[in-house]
Image (cartoon, rainbow, N blue to C red):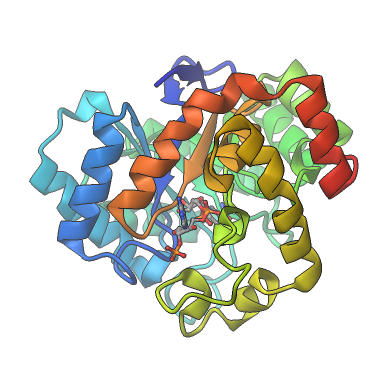
Length: 321
Ligand SMILES: NC(=O)c1ccc[n+]([C@@H]2O[C@H](COP(=O)([O-])OP(=O)(O)OC[C@H]3O[C@@H](n4cnc5c(N)ncnc54)[C@H](OP(=O)(O)O)[C@@H]3O)[C@@H](O)[C@H]2O)c1
């Protein structure tokens, strides 16, 4: 495993990391979570991602319980969670980054995780109804109170990130240091030119999500929806539509020989492709069982395989980025 600095922040994250969306609690109980986190940690992963909204808070509980069983030294790993959607139906607790919500929600997440602090705390989406200045102050105060060490954004427009950085600089507050954007062979827009200042000038880090487009890029949906896959889960009908889109499936089929040529599985090829972008700090992988963790870790062997010829093949299949 190699480690990359989280942008200009002083901490290093493993090139591959592990997240818990859909999987922890819904598909994996505590024992299976222990098994997957353990395999990831043994492979060198030092960063585990979560969010209050995953399985309505249960995903944080499962990760917290697993960490307790694993008993690793706290300094040896990083944990993140994300706030925005909320778990309670009330005007100030949903789809918001207001000060009251953030200060209360971080405490609730820490209780579920059974931790004193998280290493990274993200604003899971932007909130156009709360002034960015209010959110920046609240995130600064959370850090000052020792409940998070760094803060970041997820799926924010470049202009909003720049605005948050500039507000923090003006008031000498803790700046956001990392964005969590979607990034995979189908979705390459979050490193578009408008983000250049964010990453290059301000040295933002990035922890990218859904590198396999929820499993589509493994090729597992090319012969229908496997009954034990994310695409078969109740409540994810919106996702099933994306996973069975014929145009997308044709692209995955066309990518297979390109991955075969390198001796990589489609999953390994697609994960390695994310990592060949030097602006990516870590690729957050997902897994519903330990075998997937083992397969995905081997993606690291292919990061240097993206020659101009291979990149041309990718453009041929997916169109230019
Ligand atoms: N900030 C955000 O808004 C946001 C949004 C989404 C995710 N995230 C973060 O990013 C993490 C990763 O996202 P993701 O889970 O969507 O990643 P992904 O890599 O696109 O999808 C992971 C899923 O694909 C399947 N899979 C993975 N490896 C496989 C393999 N080798 N062979 C066959 N199937 C395989 C598994 O699902 P099945 O076995 O069930 O098919 C697995 O749970 C999340 O856990 C979360 O921490 C953040």
